[in-house]
Length: 423
Image (cartoon, rainbow, N blue to C red):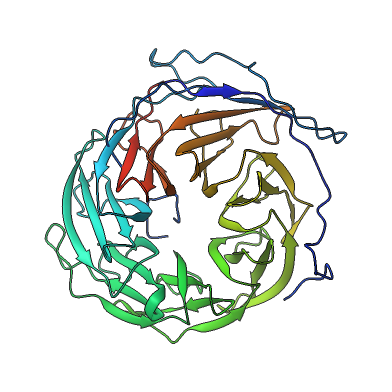
């Protein structure tokens, strides 16, 4: 299906502090892009193109110009975004997070979804062609808000971790095989209200560690792996007000993994730089769009420096913080997309090198692709219909054709949508 198309103007701006603020700072083991699925969608997709000049600020415009994609000819072209009609997968009643990984170690990618209302993780097994079959459902402690896959015990098989904010716990399901067999979930104390997870080896000891956004605790927690799927006690790093997401990335380009949180009640991100010992140093905060939900780090303009982007649920735009090196970022650049953005990832969908920003619009039930960032004055915004109330997404090549596909967790649609690339 082709996307619905519109044209807009990208504008550079100088952000101002929120009302009542003094303007001063307050302060891997998975194949999924998240981090952080299928039935048929009605309606045909269309493309959106946004023309932007960053030399001089101007007002945004909307129109209908831009390149016409030749979907279905088998040729991927820069700026061409095509998907087959979305396929809906029935899951639990309210899936809020999705990850993609080879969970059963058979060479085909599977899906992991966290269902908030059912209080469980639901698994969908892939056959390598982009088709999925419902697998087991695994109970959580209360109501999970995030989930990911990673080899936490070092046995070469992917385990599962989930954030359960109602009990202040992270749960870890160790894979004991064969297939999708897991030991009972092990509780790990993780602050007051853990909401989001990220996993990587943060202290270079060969063991996978966890970073946790503790929303009610106004902190990012680091849980260092202790071997055998166990974790050391959490190390607490204060960040801004109500961190909603955390990402792990080398934002200062020194070879060490750093942490960045999206602090939704301050319209800021907090940057925690690794000091080389497995600990982190607060490098300050920067303004972004109001109420940032999800966050991504990606080199959007291929200058060798990671940029940051945040999705805003209440503002009418997505924010980009251009990386400047040494953990520094320029003032945020807004891209007007309308209210309701919930999650955003980076993924090179058209195979031209730089990643596109791919977001879900919770209000409209749409996937939004933003392309051409940092490389040209014209950006393309393409929108695709998905399920109701999407809250998360992930990208991977699900059918082995070399093109990235998308899966969304549709919280108000009681399912997920699979969008297979159809160049």
